[in-house]
Image (cartoon, rainbow, N blue to C red; front, top):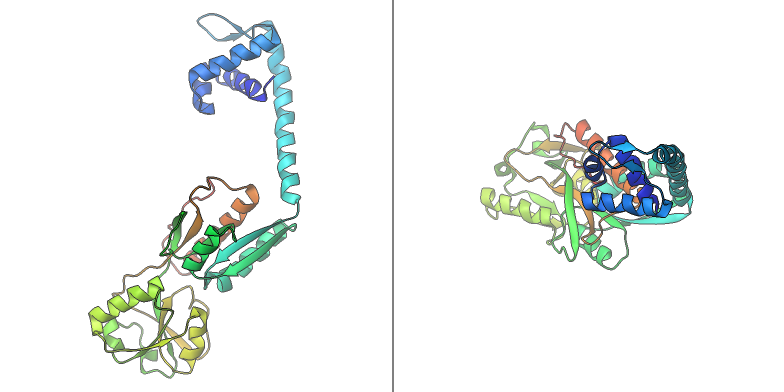
Length: 309
């Protein structure tokens, strides 16, 4: 006997209808009927009375009682197999972009390790395009990053949108401003990430609309290093609110008006990957929940989606 035939039989009895069972199991009604015919042929007994109403035969009633016990044991065995699989030593390799890699992932990994002590986590810190290439090369299981320019054969779905703020030294003339506009930033030296960074490209587009080329540039490729250069008043930095969410002495974070750029953070996976195991899904869900909590702390709107279905 096929376990699916027994499961189908049990659902029909519980719902009292072949049609309802087909809807629940997401099979066509002919498929449901065929499974019952096969089961009855294997058992060599009729399970249902043939008539207008759906009724069990005496043999069908007895079989249903035994089937319920069998299915309960099957479910318990399935759960045990999942547990044994989750406890098997294994590793996950994640591609993570900063500031997520430095500011959010350590707490997520700590919580994850407490729940899954046999799983080893490896983190490759890289920008979105490098994460995309690493995924293509099979070097990582998935990535949490901004939207890459080069998608290759991947699927990207954002689950969090950040805001941009201005970071200045406490010695800077704008340090006491409650809010600034791009026009206030004429002749400033901007600390920028590399030229191919999507956020930098968008920022410079808006700067040129507001102040033309009346600004200077200093490239510091690692975004989380900007605060050290800003503190020495070597320039100002426009970067995500998440990156500037922790107070750094000697600097001041100032909101920017009229800068409608909201950099995404999202899940990057192979486009042909339709499912993940429970361990990987647990990690993804914990990351999403961490961003949800971060959004609440920063008073961001809730825009998360469910990635575990």
